[in-house]
Amino acid sequence: MDTTVTGDVNVWRSLFSLVLVFGAMGGCFYWVRRQRGFNPGAERRMKVVERLPVDAKRSVLLLTVDGETLLLGVSGEQITLLKSFGSAEKNDDA
Image (cartoon, rainbow, N blue to C red):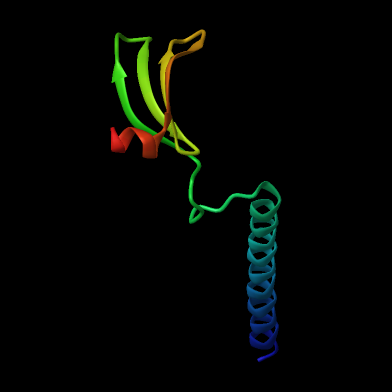
């Protein structure tokens, strides 16, 4: 009978330790998210509108950043601004 009580205490102690470890991990994850400003529900300032591959290493990207539309040439070594279209609202009216 004495072994059952000791076994029960060991099970509860193990469960408490497991909850404590997962709680600490969750707290660390929450803290890191707050420090880095990671918020998946937040509105993004930059959006890739379209990507057109030119070949295996190069592509052309059309992005909007804070309402401005940019056409970029992207390769393995560099990114080049090909054209800036200005405000997205102005482009819709034209």
